[in-house]
Image (cartoon, rainbow, N blue to C red; front, side, top):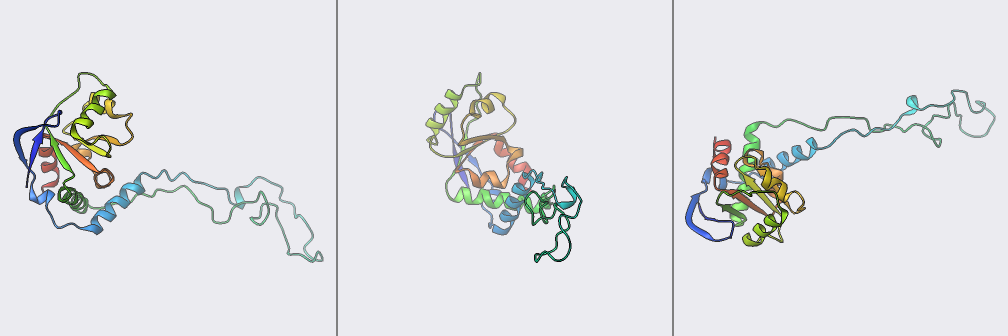
Length: 209
């Protein structure tokens, strides 16, 4: 499929770019998308949660009351989970939530997500540009020209551009990444995908295998 290239003023430049069917028009695999998003979210978890169990609580080890004759249940330690200030039973421990997925499945997931975006006409390609200095006002002007000022947008660069990144950093509904950093979670999270013209070549080299 072909898509028209526009400039930073939001105007067509009379040039089209080919979006490969092998990437932007595949048979979507929803389960691959699910697994890739699940892995992304799991890998972002810190896993530093921790509570103390009865063996880790500081406190007296004396028997708090005699074994028999009280008419209540026996109790041998103030650190028991049934008492206030006692340890927690089966509390959370630090752990790593990440898990592995093979590269082929992750490619299928990204292709499937890009296909959904292409079918929904939520992809645009912009002629390569840069900012002379980092200014949020310039980036807001760009979004207005592209008519995406009120939508969550993902800007995909061909390579790192510090001025563009810093200009967008204060905007909560916008994220700037490079083509090699493109992932399934971000593709689905943001309403519009704005590709640099040269970033399409990078996407082709990464996903068209």
